[in-house]
Image (tube, rainbow, N blue to C red; front, side, top):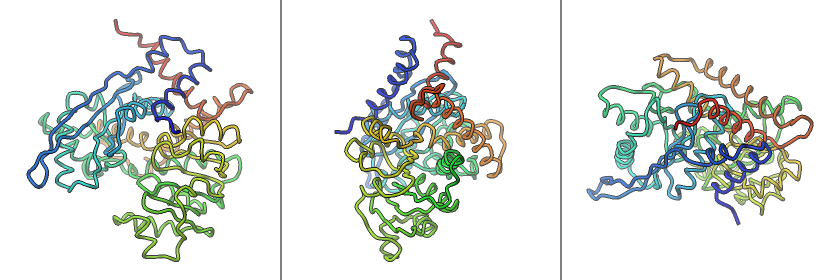
Length: 420
């Protein structure tokens, strides 16, 4: 049975806190949420009817600065999911040494069931509900599953209109034409490549490594393309419609270009049936490859399939793809895992760059963005592997990353003190 992601995130926290000997008052403080905002709001549909939607925004911790985190539109979204993901954002920002705390939010909706006009109506009304708690110095949303640059543009415009002037720094992940950052769309996937290269720098390079990528959305598709460009051989790919395999390597640029035009991998396979064979979705996770990149949703690596995972290196491009039970099994088997709070930190890092540019009315080149992204992620990776060495008593990268994040947030809280 798969535990909820909140149970796993809390269990990981307490495991790290036990190892650190964390003071009880900080333990209680860091397992509390600063703000849990829930709302039910009406949206006018195309046929003139009105539907009530459920939305939420959770702010976990603001000790390091204004909070940062994505906005998710998903039919199965729960408040526990949002709380867990906000806590992961706190550690992620701390590991990358960004001046942000963690937050997360979203709406219970399948965006594919809405017209573009209905999606805009929903986004603008939800933003108006959130207006008291978001802001460039308070809480800064970004895209996540089910949302994109257009959704962020609507959020920014709605918030700006309520204040009477344009406030581009209220969200990140916007289109470049209205204050977004170069390189933001590719940031999470590019960060996956940078951390993969950092991990493999002692063992060669990505070139020639066989790779399986589960998930072909914004993150998985970019990661697969960049890994291919770096010389990796992507033998397995999947999205929610189909799973594909080609032992000689899938035509990732072809699949990427097709998906970028608004299609999915199943449609690509129907157009090019000889490009790959269809396999069972679970086979992507247990493929005979060197590297596994879960880049879809939470809790896909479980106690049931972890014993059958053959990759020796897992890069968690998704949030929370590995359950605690699976993590223990994989660690016992000697599988190296670059944890989500490090592996997918590229997105929030470039979001930070976008926020900085918006605050200063500057525009960085894509080359500058990518150079700074590598510098920050290399520094974060070194902090985690140094902590993992643990003075001759090695621990997993996940345990080390949690320790680094918790220590940095605890130190900020200690220095600030608790307001009476």
